[in-house]
Length: 149
Image (cartoon, rainbow, N blue to C red):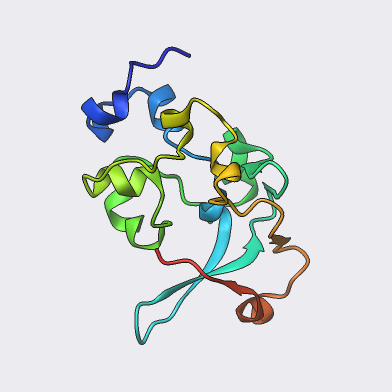
């Protein structure tokens, strides 16, 4: 996988290669937790309840290439879908930040060169999640976490 040097600073999201696009993911895992959206306020609340394919130790999907087959409601992030869903993405998400014309955080793996820098910075949900297979949806509100999208 060849990435252009500091591509995230010079290449528009829609012009990135697939490898560059995927490399933007910092591995925080926050996009893979279930969120509650309150209709009356539009507020988005993050829960500790993860997708059934989420691996809470690695903060990665257990079957990323086939996730839509197992979880039809999984949102596939693309430059085209990003504008519609950026509002519920984590505030530190590289996709959201670049869409908003902002810089990546100093701890981002692309900046540090360290794939574990997100976890070392405390910016991931590693070890904090419970599977949606184990918690009834009616109880998800009992598992809210602090996050400002």
